[in-house]
Length: 101
Image (cartoon, rainbow, N blue to C red; front, side, top):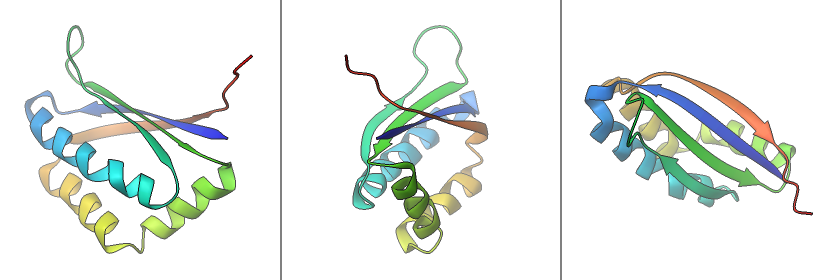
């Protein structure tokens, strides 16, 4: 199992646009076999950082999702939405493995 942690720097004046973008991605990750754990938007403190977490059964399945997403019409439209609204300034992607016991 591998969990992707996304750390976004967003335009604090475009949080509504970023929230819309987030809501578009959640079912897409699930469609490709992942489990989305949600997006986390600024509340108190820093106002331009957002987070997301989602899990795939393996890194290989995550890579398949990434590759397939570039050819999926819904994903392409979601990428375009983020580009058109310019709500994301930058992001970092990290991967973690869970420890349960």
